[in-house]
Length: 260
Image (cartoon, rainbow, N blue to C red; front, side, top):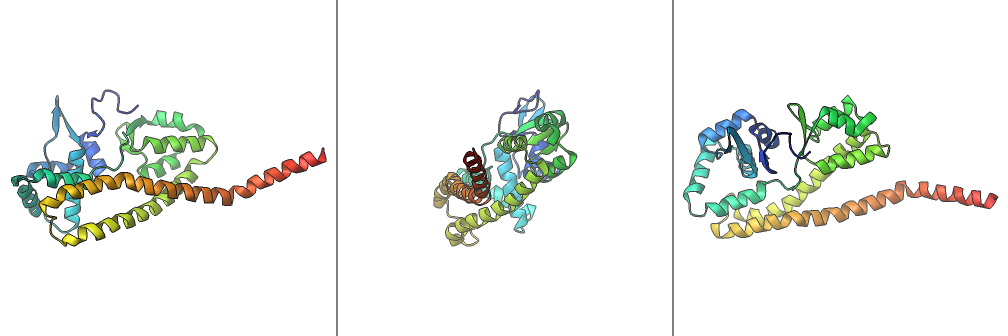
C-alpha cells in the first residue's frame, strides 16, 4: 500500500511527525519555526495539518543556515527581506531546486506482519535493526515508513534467490558510503565552478532563474552519468567473480559429454 490505511494525504505530503523524521528535526523545533514565521503554517485538512515538499525544502535551508553559524534571528531577517522583495519567487525557486527531494519515489507504509510476510524466514530482528539504522525502514507508530519501495523490492528479490538479508544490508551500507563520497565530489564541482564566483554574497536576482534551471537539469544528468558507471562496475565484477564459476561449469559439462 502506498499510504497508511485511512490516510487522505497525497504523495509529497507529510504529517508533522513525518516531516520531522524526513527533515531530521524535532516536532518541537518545527512548531517553534512556525511560531517565529520561519516556516509557513501547514495546509488544513479538516482538523489535521498537512505539510508538503515546500515545507521540507524550507526546513533544509534553515538547517543549512544554522550549520553555517546563522542565528534564528539572522534567518528571520533574511527570510523577511526575501519576502518583502519583489523577487521572492526567484529566490524561493532556487531554494526549492537545491533543497527539494531528489527522488520522485512515493514512500510506502508496512506493518510488522507485512514485513514478516514479505521476507519470510529471512526476516530477523537483527536484519530489522540494521534496516532501521540505515533508514531503509523508519518506525512510525504501528507502521514502518519505506522511503524507497524500489530498494525494498530489490532486497526481497535478492533474498528470494538466497542472499542472506543481513549480508545484503552490509553491502548496502558499504555502497552508501561510496555513493555519498562520489555525490559529494560531484556537487563540489558545481559549487566551485558556479556558486563560488559569487563569494559569500547571494547571487544577483537576474542570475537566480538560470541557477535554478541549472540545478533542475543537474538531477537527470547525475542519473545519466551514474548508471553507466554502475553498469560498467557490475560487468567488471561479474566477469571477475562469476566468469571463473561459469567456465568451471562449462568444463564440467564438456567432460561429461566426452565421457559418453
